[in-house]
Image (tube, rainbow over all chains, first blue to last red; front, side, top):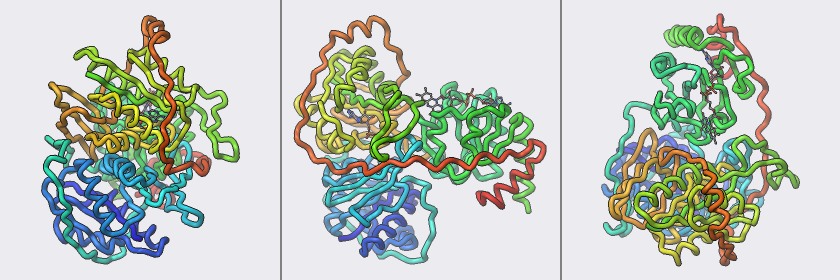
Length: 323
Length: 246
Ligand SMILES: Cc1cc2nc3c(=O)[nH]c(=O)nc-3n(C[C@H](O)[C@H](O)[C@H](O)COP(=O)(O)OP(=O)(O)OC[C@H]3O[C@@H](n4cnc5c(N)ncnc54)[C@H](O)[C@@H]3O)c2cc1C
Ligand SMILES: Nc1ncnc2c1ncn2[C@@H]1O[C@H](COP(=O)(O)O)[C@@H](O)[C@H]1O
């Protein structure tokens, strides 16, 4: 028995959510009295692979196949299944990020291994294998029990803070047979905003709503985000009206985010918006209406006009950062 | 073109979330149920657009009890041609996916659309499981789906951007915002839906791999601490010293 973690990478760098998954896998392995290994596919440097030891991985199986630099879910499913068999892994961990969402369900069906998608706590193994996850879009939690012999858990990003332990993993080449014909989904192009933190991985998010009146006022949001090293987000009407790109839309029908700090400016706090942000550790609301529902979900609030308050806040933060 | 759209029933987005039976069951008293928004707005509407452009049929499937029928009728009213309800109540994704795959095996669909996730149990799993069970390619969390002959070009969300994929039909795709614009059923559609076929089929034997042991509600927030707009320095201090997030 062992624990296996699929650690995904982008352009040779292991994603932060994947490091969180490795660390989670290490904790599960400790709980079960076994070892945790990782599997990485695509071209990645040996140093980067070995650094997974820093998060508890004993060994990293590396499939150094350039065809796997981008994910083909069907192929990667077979590769991870082969690795699990080789290592005798009964528990397989993914990050509940876009790769995890593409692969974990396939693997679950392939291995008949029960899947809990989006775990927010370590499993309770005192009586079976029970994992807590968000349900009802963060408005409640469920404890889900996995009854199959093999188990898959995908870990909600930004839920477990990284705590490096300072180790080096052994790197082992792994070459399962992979046929060209299995690449049914061909990746034509990947368009990512480089130099920006993806929203789902951001520690701090500054978000704007219809209260900002128009796209021309987004400098306010961007300046504040800039001093904080934060990512920017928006409410649905804002992205629907094209003031901001779709990938910034958070909420029930957009992205679910869980930053340490979420600053909402000119957003009313409709239940569908809250559904995507209520996992944030600390919420700050700036709204001119003291009755805005968002204040009920906030930790800190300023009742005031965003056009006056936000520039002042940005200045105050600049001063704070300078010290 | 033959398309299957997987339809699930979820509480309305504004429903009060509460539990009964010692926190093991969702309390549906007074709750309005809707078609899961991703299934309705994106999966179903995109399927209808493709049918309108290329001809063909749109089938609907739901795995659920008789209480799912108003939902599936609404999906028929929006333009689905024929509906199937697998008469089983289960929360286990693998069980549900097995039922959908079993139905699809006999029908040879060109495209199977699901929503990206249900807004109640947030599994984001059914599409991938169905694809694996049918040995079909799977594209998850798609924001755009274009068809040229039998080749689909699909934009799929990835961290911080999009990936553009090319895949030959048949394919399973989970859909999100961007795929289509929501529609409202019209009177003619509602009337027509009454006579469209809704077949009830009994489930096949399938494994259940997970079960819900219980629910919990999040602890109540302590209440907001208000800071004066004339004293933003105070907020900076609180965020640093008290909340420790900057
Ligand atoms: C099924 C469904 C799904 C949905 N999914 C989502 C979703 O995923 N994400 C989402 O965001 N919404 C979603 N919505 C929409 C949601 O219900 C709200 O309509 C939306 O969140 C409102 O956006 P807003 O707060 O930006 O705008 P508004 O509700 O118009 O609020 C603007 C706020 O700005 C404040 N304001 C105005 N001027 C100023 C100023 N000068 N300074 C400070 N404050 C100011 C106002 O007091 C007000 O509170 C969904 C709705 C439905 C029905
Ligand atoms: N009971 C069900 N019957 C039919 N389709 C379903 C059912 N549950 C989920 N689905 C489909 O699978 C998608 C993802 O659901 P889930 O994996 O449960 O988050 C949904 O958006 C639906 O399209």
